[in-house]
Amino acid sequence: MYFKKKIGRFNFFNKTLLIPDMSKMLSHLCAACLRGFGIDAKTLETCNPRALELGKEYTSGKECYPCQITMGDILYFLKKEKERLKDDFNVEKYLYLMPETAGPCRFGMYNKYQHIVFSSFPEFAKLKIASLSAEDSYSFDGMIDKKKVTAIRKASFIALVAADILDRLLMRIRPYENKAGAAERFILKAQNILSEAFEKYSASGNFNFIFKKLEQIAANGKRLLNSSISPKPLVGIVGEIYLRSHAFSNQNLIKNLEEQGAEVVNASIAEWVNFTSYKELKNAEQEVRLNLTSFKIKPIVDSMKNVLKYGKIFFYQQYKQKRIYDRAVKFLNIAQDHNVKDLEKIIKERKLFTLDIGTEACLSIPGALSYAEHGFNGVVNVYPFTCMPSAITSAIVKPIMSKIRMPYLDVSYDSTYQPSRETAIKTFMYQVKRHFKKHGRGSF
Image (tube, rainbow, N blue to C red; front, side, top):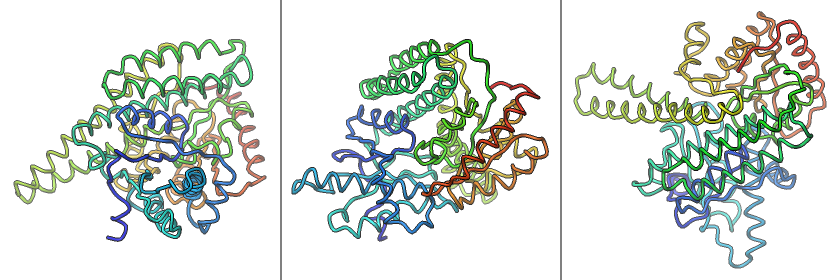
C-alpha cells in the first residue's frame, strides 16, 4: 500500500513525463511520439559523469548497473531543475517513467528502491513514478484516456521498431562508411527527422509519411557505403536489454568490436516487447485450458477475452514490424528481427530452456544459437555483473559454442573500468577473424 501511493498507473497528461535514456533512438522517438498525443514527454540526459557519481552515491553496488545509471540520471535532472527554477520548482509537476517486470530479475524493484531514495530528499519526496509492466505487455491502461490507449500503443510500437531500424542502419553502415564519422552524423540527423515526423503525425494514425521518411533514410544511408571495403566477420550480441542497448554503460562495446574489424548485429528492443506479448498470449491460452476443466463460465469467458486481446496485440506487432523492416530492406540490407516463435522452437527442440520461466534468457539462449545457425563468426553475451538470467544464458550457451567451435564472449559490466576487458575483446576478435577465414560468413 505504501508504494501504491507513489508508484503505479498515474495519468500522463498535465505532467512533464521524464523518460530514462536506454537507447538514444528509442527514448527520443518514443518521447516524440507521446508529444504528438499532447503529452509533455522529455528524455533524460545520460552519460554525464556527475550523474553516474550520484547514482553510485545513492546505491550500494549490489544493485545491477542499470539501476545506478537511471538513479543518477533522474537525481541529476531533478537537482539541475531545482537550481534552474529555484522557488518555482514543484516536483509534483513531473512524472518519472520507470517500467518493471515480474519474476527474479532485480529490474522489478528499481522503481521501489528509487522511490525510497526520492523520499530521502524533502524536495523530491512527492515525485510519482509511472510504471508500465511486462506482466500486461506494457499496457497504457490507466495512464491515458481510454479512447487513446490503442492509438498510443500502436504509435509507440512503430516508434520502437523505427528506432531499432536506425540502430541497425548505424551498425550496417559504420563498418563500411566512406568517411570516418559519416554514419554517426547521418543517424543523428535521421533521428531528428523521424522525431519531428512522429511528433507531427503519430496522433493521426497515418504513418505513411513516417514510413516514407524511413525509406529515404535507408536509401541515403546506402550512399555512405564504401563498396571497396570487403565484407567483415559477423558478430551477434545477446544479453540484458539495457546494457546491450546503452552505449555509455557498455563502454561503447559495439563500436569497439567494429574498430577491431567486426560487423555487429545487436538483438533488438522490439524482440523483448514481442516476447512479452507472446508470453501473455500463451498464459491466456493456458488459463483457458485450466478453466475448461472446472466448467466455470465466467473464468472461461474472461480467459478467452485475454486470448483474443493478446493474440491481436501479438499479431499486430509481428505484422507491422515486418512491413516496416521490408520498407528499409529494399534499399539497404539490414538484419531483420528474430521471430519469437522461431526462438521458442530452438529451445524446445533442444530441450534447453522454456519460455514459462521468463526473463531475457528465453531470448538470449536461442538468439545466440540462431546467430550460429546463420553463419555468424562470434557471439557476445552482455549483462550487468551478477545478472542471474545472463548467468543462466552463459551456463547453457557457452558449452554449446565451445562444442561447435564458435567464438563466444561473456562481458559483464558494473560502474568500474576493467582494463582486462579490452584484452578479452581483442582475443575474442582474433578468434572471430580465424573463424571468418576458415568458414566465411553467413547472412543476416
